[in-house]
Image 1 (tube, rainbow, N blue to C red):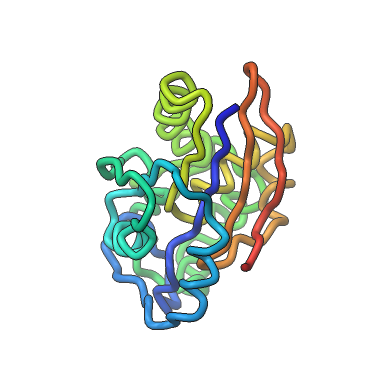
Image 2: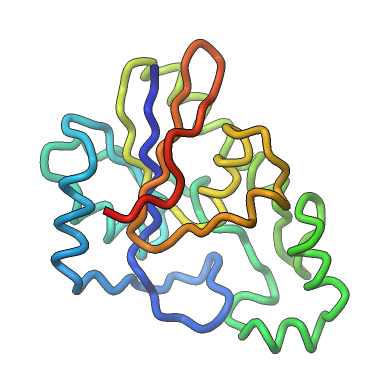
Length: 192
């Protein structure tokens, strides 16, 4: 049984789309980080996206955990031309496309960006490999809103649109279990 503890990185305080832009996390809330650290298992494997907001969050959770190399395939969705734009600016620039992006997640992608399905396909081989190579491990995976959502979709059997109804707060834990080729969801968006 491989237990995934998906952690969303610390807050960035951005008021815009943040995909592959390398924006730092605010990790100044020592009490929240201590609660999160206490919630996560030891021993465990610790892995993160290669974006600084995830790597810095993972770095503060290293004690008692084996830090693995950062994984570019765990990056947030590539928002393409929308990255760095405020949500209202995106809806004014691309009103139909931006609406479809949220209401019909799947193959709809931002200009020069990546769809839900493309992001899910990008991270799936890494997750599959970890499940195969570490069938009895706890894995703490520090990642991003979109990537965590794709894994909830995979584990729950819900549609991408249904999954988007969930919140994934910064420094929250979503626990998914993979056992004998099957997934189950234990908790979504737990704030320790």
